[in-house]
Length: 585
Image (spheres, one colour):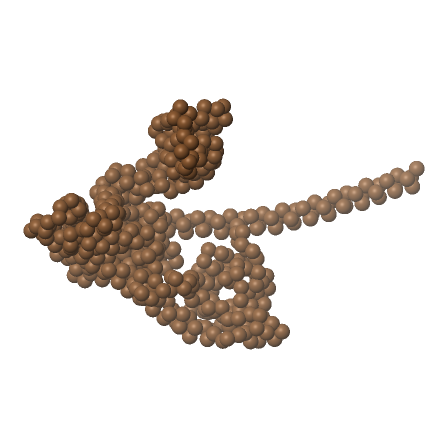
């Protein structure tokens, strides 16, 4: 409670969550709910891989994850890796026996049983993960609804404005609107509550405490009085005025925000101004997203493309296993080969995914492979256009008539091979990346030579060097962030383990109390001397700089006015002296 009161204005919510979780770990480590609170918060925060990596790679968070996890996620990781390796071996052997032998043996049924058990395990785990994410989202929606109802009861919101209400104009779109006013600030009137003096300001922003800097807030609004100025703060935006008899009037912006105007509601405003409710609503979903949510696929689950890939692998393997229950007929062997190829491809991609969590270096190499695909996306588009251009030219100039020649075939006349679109793309691709090319397919005229020379210049010389530069830059970026990437993956692994197997960590290794005490001290030190302290210092420096600038501008303006008056007096004196000299003359 002391930490909460002392650091109430801190914006580092993750640090507060870490403090709370470490405290709960110290108090009672028998309940899994305490361990997963921070993991639930991060799962609902929808952090990007880069953001979660920055959080997870900090020293405090690394120790915290180990305190929460014990050895649970490592045990699950080793088990899953062994299951996938076993599944890959058994699946490959099963499909080979089924495709190239027409007998049902005991080994075939054993392999089929093992594959079915492992695939069902993966399917149940994936379904459990879907249900966990859906439960978290339902809890979050319930919390938001309770917050909206609480806000509505606190402010006494009406469907439209009435006389005496306060209107804010000129600010950001989400800030403009009307706020109900039960009473207005007037002179030095005040009332006391628990010994503190309050003044009523813009209603909807709650009461403002004059004695000291501490103030109460309404949702994201903050109103306070500091050294003669009244201030309004809203999620990083600040406005001020240097008078206090009434809130109505212009409020100047502290930074680059537009100034706002505060005035009372007038009858002629009508329905132009509605009540504003800061309810934290999430963005509305489309019909397809609503359908996915209704069938149980939560936003947190479906926003990760790897979850869809896992589902594809599981479904494809189930299809192959069902087909493998019987002998494959000759008409269905090609379809069986295609299904097996998709499943084996997915299995090996999943094994690459498990390699990301083994070590920081292996994680960097695997992530680098997938980062390359994103880095060269525009390169592939330009490359496709260039290859299409040259393939079209060569196909147009070297295509032969492919129909019947009605028997008028002279064997001594050289007949040009028929080129199709697929063959042109394949030959140009081999020329660009492998240097392999057969010029006998083309007529030996000068235009074909010019086209091929231009292709070599644009693709082999220019585009290949561009590709090397892109790959080198992506490699350097991946290696520079390898540490953060590894801990981001470890965070996701611990989160998934804690959500799907909530009671597993308690059966494994526990950390000693002395380590928890050490981490708690680290958290306190970070809260006092870390990011929050630096942020408050920066805010104080900005406020002092702002006041100095305002004072300097005011004094400069006064001095300028005095200099103007002095110059005007000198000019008048000069004119007067000229008049006196004229009279004397």
